[in-house]
Amino acid sequence: MRPRHDDPEIPASIQAKDLDRAARAELKTLSKDNADDVARHLVAAARFLEDDPELAHRHALSASRRAGRVGVVRETLAITAYTNGDFPLALRELRTYRRISGRDDQLPLMVDSERGIGRPDRALELGRSVDRATLPASVQVDLAIAMSGARLDLGQAEEALAELEIPQLDPDRAFSYSPALFSAYAEVLEELGRDRAAEEWRARALRAEAALEAPYAESELITVIEIAEEEPELGAEPEDEADPEPELASESGEESEGATEAAGEGEADGPLPDED
Image (cartoon, rainbow, N blue to C red; front, side, top):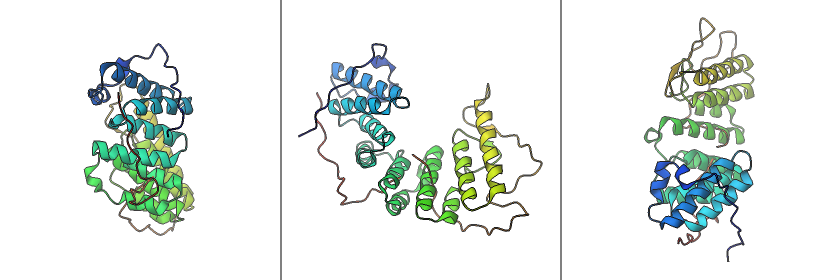
């Protein structure tokens, strides 16, 4: 028997049309009234996620009870569960979303959910299960950050650094994902005691973030103007530091946003809820 769930009130200002077009397209299999209700709950979940994650999760649950076989609904429920620290539920819902949609775009969140459950080994296994070349660049970066975090969980700081040394770690260019990647790299360098290099990468993260927020900045790519005349090559340390170069690992990752799709776990998906 399902636990009791009372639908939260949806603010009158939230309309079904507020849901983005791609998500609305996934609701076409539902009746119009049900699709409108689900859409409004999804919009509410997104709107409240940062300021009131518990309320956002209740809206996601309401959407899931009405449209449990719709990928974007299960994805939203996974995200709200993750934000509330319910990593087992997040992982279960992400597996369901992956099965329904056939997509790997939430693999980084799955890896991080495995980390949240306390299974960094499983997180690394899951992260290695997909050919990263098939993933969009932003997803590759998120996966690298999550994988790096799993390495840190295991006390493998050198390997954590290597996880982040991916083509997107370019100090001269900034994409939307660059500030998070540069910051993650700085944190691992600091963990390794390479404080000077950590400061340089942290400064790059700040410059990239500022450049991306500047008026008229291109959404895809900007060139980051460096203050220093020379910057060390990717992964290289300043000449006055004698730290050994990290071994290059085959994976990448860190941060919130880890998991392993292990067969036979006690978190196997239950029956999908019925829709109206």
